[in-house]
Amino acid sequence: MGLTNKIDLLHRIPNLRIIAVAPLANLARCAEQIGTDYVMSWRPNPSNMVTCGFDAGRIRANLRENLEAARGCHLHINLKDVYTLEGDVSRLARWTTIAREVAEEIAP
Image 1 (cartoon, rainbow, N blue to C red):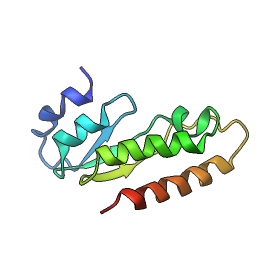
Image 2: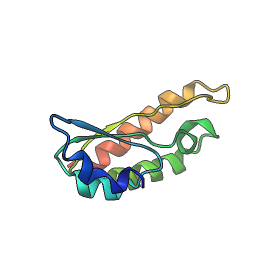
Image 3: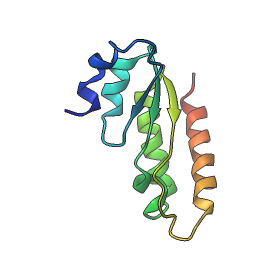
């Protein structure tokens, strides 16, 4: 049972403000259940973002799909567990630029 199926349990925790949504969780289903009750700290899969090659089109499509799914929610994107950049540190700056562009497209 992953996070996607435990959100009803989290609603019982007093003073909870942020729910971390791991890469394996279904962000769309989590967003439906969380709504604006909490901040979702979404942790995208780093291998889809920057660690296993760098494909701007793939990154943009992944971000767009997930940001659309979380539209209207309070969302924090936390790119973590980046153990390698395959020697290309500029990937982080390029990813940040793409993430900001997609967020501006999706934001109301």
